[in-house]
Image 1 (spheres, rainbow, N blue to C red):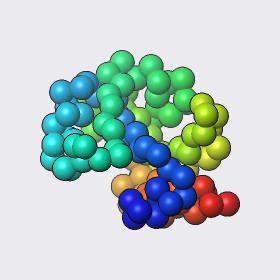
Image 2: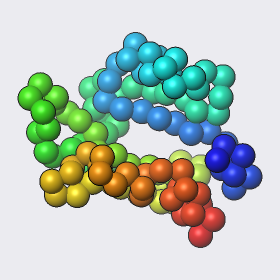
Image 3: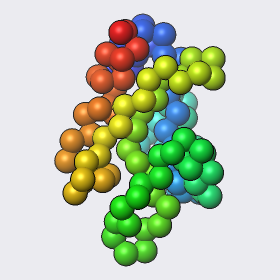
Length: 112
């Protein structure tokens, strides 16, 4: 999939969540993405998430506050070209069907 994304002009994949840099570094190590075109980033205060309107409204499990919706964006020169969002009532995190936010859906949107 990485080759297909690069062939479609995707230069970098940014993965972020409402978490701190230590958590994101651990996730990067766990996923083995160091040195790849995937960059892990944290949004510890949720400022970017709030600015995008992507804060999850469902409280989720106790103790989890300020969660981000599952989404994928295609951005070119700072302009959002596409946003795919997973999550439905009862599955606010998009766990049951994340397909709108996975690489094949993003690739399809980029090619459109």
